Length: 64
Image (cartoon, rainbow, N blue to C red; front, side, top):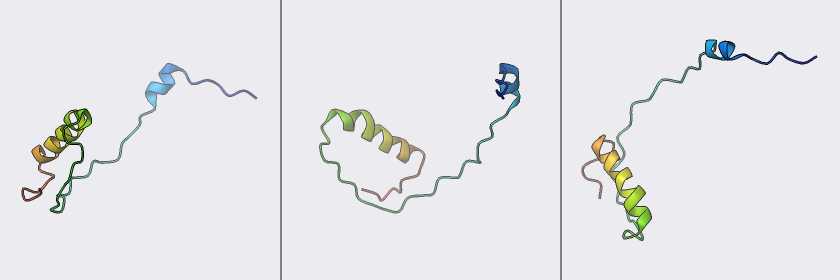
């Protein structure tokens, strides 16, 4: 027997729930070494990611 294909109305009725978000845990103090720091990948991805971590206060101030 063929199963009935779900209609768009039936798909809209099904709700997908996401698990609750966890609060970010403050990272332990650390030292980072970035090899190839002058490269394009570092400028486009690594530096903005580190900035966002620092801005959201996930990195400690004494991380180097």
